[in-house]
Image 1 (spheres, rainbow, N blue to C red):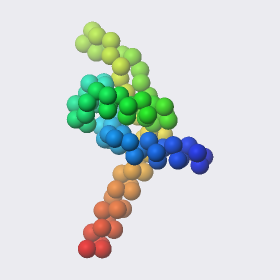
Image 2 (cartoon, rainbow, N blue to C red):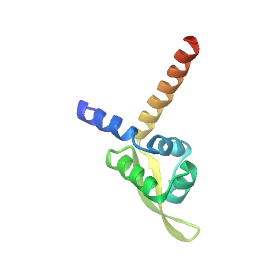
Image 3 (cartoon, rainbow, N blue to C red):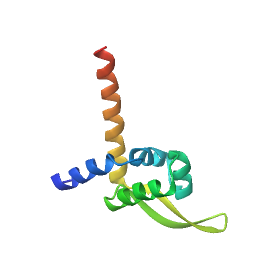
Image 4 (cartoon, rainbow, N blue to C red):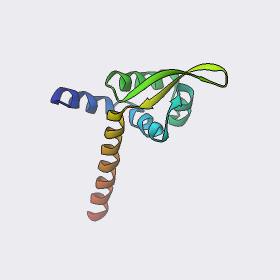
Length: 102
Protein backbone atom coordinates (compact mmCIF):
# COMPACT_ATOMS: atom_id res chain seq x y z
CA UNK A 1 0.00 0.00 0.00
CA UNK A 2 1.54 3.32 -0.98
CA UNK A 3 1.39 6.56 1.02
CA UNK A 4 -1.71 7.93 -0.71
CA UNK A 5 -3.65 4.70 -0.20
CA UNK A 6 -2.67 4.58 3.48
CA UNK A 7 -3.88 8.15 3.97
CA UNK A 8 -7.19 7.24 2.30
CA UNK A 9 -7.61 4.23 4.60
CA UNK A 10 -6.90 6.35 7.68
CA UNK A 11 -9.32 9.04 6.47
CA UNK A 12 -12.10 6.49 5.91
CA UNK A 13 -11.49 4.79 9.27
CA UNK A 14 -12.31 8.09 10.95
CA UNK A 15 -15.80 8.22 9.44
CA UNK A 16 -18.86 7.40 11.49
CA UNK A 17 -19.58 3.67 11.97
CA UNK A 18 -16.80 2.47 9.63
CA UNK A 19 -14.80 0.57 12.25
CA UNK A 20 -18.01 -0.90 13.64
CA UNK A 21 -18.86 -2.28 10.19
CA UNK A 22 -15.41 -3.85 9.83
CA UNK A 23 -15.78 -5.49 13.23
CA UNK A 24 -19.30 -6.65 12.39
CA UNK A 25 -17.99 -8.40 9.27
CA UNK A 26 -15.15 -10.10 11.19
CA UNK A 27 -17.18 -13.30 11.58
CA UNK A 28 -18.47 -13.43 8.01
CA UNK A 29 -20.64 -11.85 5.38
CA UNK A 30 -23.79 -9.90 6.22
CA UNK A 31 -26.63 -8.16 4.47
CA UNK A 32 -27.05 -4.39 4.61
CA UNK A 33 -29.94 -4.78 7.05
CA UNK A 34 -27.85 -7.03 9.32
CA UNK A 35 -25.02 -4.47 9.28
CA UNK A 36 -27.43 -1.64 10.02
CA UNK A 37 -28.84 -3.58 12.98
CA UNK A 38 -25.39 -4.55 14.29
CA UNK A 39 -24.00 -1.02 14.25
CA UNK A 40 -27.29 0.59 15.35
CA UNK A 41 -27.27 3.28 12.69
CA UNK A 42 -29.69 4.90 10.32
CA UNK A 43 -29.84 3.81 6.68
CA UNK A 44 -27.99 6.90 5.43
CA UNK A 45 -25.14 6.53 7.93
CA UNK A 46 -24.78 2.83 7.14
CA UNK A 47 -24.85 3.51 3.39
CA UNK A 48 -22.16 6.21 3.61
CA UNK A 49 -19.89 3.91 5.64
CA UNK A 50 -20.45 0.91 3.34
CA UNK A 51 -19.81 3.05 0.25
CA UNK A 52 -16.57 4.46 1.69
CA UNK A 53 -15.31 1.00 2.69
CA UNK A 54 -16.19 -0.45 -0.71
CA UNK A 55 -14.53 2.42 -2.55
CA UNK A 56 -11.15 1.86 -0.87
CA UNK A 57 -11.38 -1.92 -1.13
CA UNK A 58 -11.81 -2.94 2.50
CA UNK A 59 -15.16 -4.62 1.88
CA UNK A 60 -16.88 -6.02 -1.19
CA UNK A 61 -20.49 -6.48 -2.11
CA UNK A 62 -22.19 -9.32 -3.94
CA UNK A 63 -25.74 -10.21 -4.83
CA UNK A 64 -26.95 -13.46 -3.31
CA UNK A 65 -30.16 -15.35 -2.62
CA UNK A 66 -31.33 -15.77 0.94
CA UNK A 67 -34.64 -17.34 1.70
CA UNK A 68 -35.64 -17.10 -1.95
CA UNK A 69 -34.97 -13.33 -2.05
CA UNK A 70 -32.14 -11.47 -3.72
CA UNK A 71 -30.06 -9.52 -1.23
CA UNK A 72 -26.76 -7.68 -1.34
CA UNK A 73 -24.21 -9.11 1.03
CA UNK A 74 -21.00 -7.55 2.24
CA UNK A 75 -17.76 -9.21 3.29
CA UNK A 76 -14.23 -8.19 4.21
CA UNK A 77 -11.63 -8.27 1.46
CA UNK A 78 -8.12 -9.57 2.27
CA UNK A 79 -7.05 -5.93 2.71
CA UNK A 80 -10.02 -5.35 5.01
CA UNK A 81 -9.04 -8.40 7.08
CA UNK A 82 -5.49 -7.06 7.39
CA UNK A 83 -6.67 -3.58 8.39
CA UNK A 84 -8.98 -5.13 10.99
CA UNK A 85 -6.07 -7.16 12.42
CA UNK A 86 -4.03 -3.95 12.57
CA UNK A 87 -6.88 -2.13 14.37
CA UNK A 88 -7.32 -4.97 16.86
CA UNK A 89 -3.58 -5.00 17.54
CA UNK A 90 -3.53 -1.21 17.92
CA UNK A 91 -6.47 -1.43 20.34
CA UNK A 92 -4.73 -4.11 22.45
CA UNK A 93 -1.47 -2.15 22.56
CA UNK A 94 -3.22 1.09 23.48
CA UNK A 95 -5.16 -0.57 26.31
CA UNK A 96 -1.93 -2.13 27.58
CA UNK A 97 -0.17 1.24 27.56
CA UNK A 98 -3.08 2.94 29.30
CA UNK A 99 -3.08 0.23 31.99
CA UNK A 100 0.68 0.57 32.56
CA UNK A 101 0.49 4.38 32.79
CA UNK A 102 -2.25 4.49 35.46
